[in-house]
Image 1 (tube, rainbow, N blue to C red):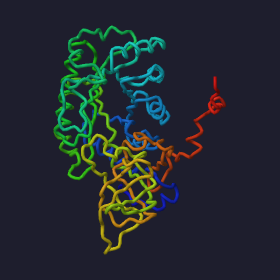
Image 2: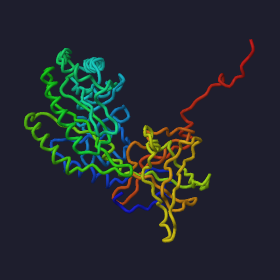
Image 3: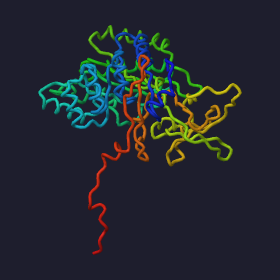
Image 4: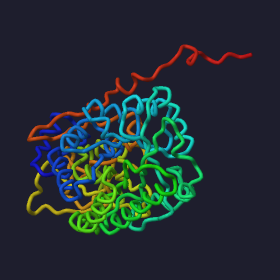
Length: 426
């Protein structure tokens, strides 16, 4: 957070649990990234990381383009005033209506994941009598090291294998309405080492030339993916954008000079939003169990699954802070387990987090929570529903998603008299 926040005031006005996003920080972070990187490299915000309309409004106003993966995300960015020429659509299992909506909106490109999908895009574009630009997602033979989640070098549901494209056996230029004119490669995520990003990009730019030569396609655009990471845990360091720019920008400059008509795209989600968000909770009860202190809060992992550490061998905490009061000078801190209201032992937001002695009514915040929060969590577990979401901008707090009520949750359910009729005997 770059601004002073009245956490008590936010809790009083919007209730808890609530996600709070610092819009001033979001805009400044994107501006700084764009200023550091080569001017030819366009930053497309990956809405999968945080699809909230208010968050996107801030980033779009600061110059972000849009990478979307669903009808709802597509609608969000178009209704926000995004030029369709600044939208790409990704995903390995696009539905017919999704493809049709992309073609109908005239977005810049559909990122195609298979030859079967390419045929579906061609058919949808033919139905409208237009040509739709397509970027081929490539499943690379190259496997990156230094990524927390590697996306290449293995059999994947994503993309078309590099070797299959380089063989040149599929007539990519033969489609009348699917205009194959570029590639997209995503090699990994949560990368904190600038050198890894540079090596990834060098490989992708070289691969683009090799695929164009093998297949005869144009290179209207090369999407180098993203994967820029943020530090969540103790011992992790921030990505050095100055070091990244030092080695990445000359690569991009050389490629842009050799391909003056080619659009260069970088996708970024987590990097743009994670550090700008806080998950705000209120302590309901405190207790001691077998020598350990517990604070049971009104928020939990149903809103913040990332904090559970799914996929990690060792549970590590996101940074957690006491926000509603300043501890007394002589007040000792100690290890606290922060649990939520769910009926599962997995509902532990933080384990042995060093905090002042917590009390019922205290506000605590899980920091670095601006990406992969509620939309990537089982928000309807135990029928709790979505939390509120708030964006702080220019000193004012704006509610950008209302909290689910019981009526919201139950209103979409239905029943029928036959379902409650006693079972008869034959």
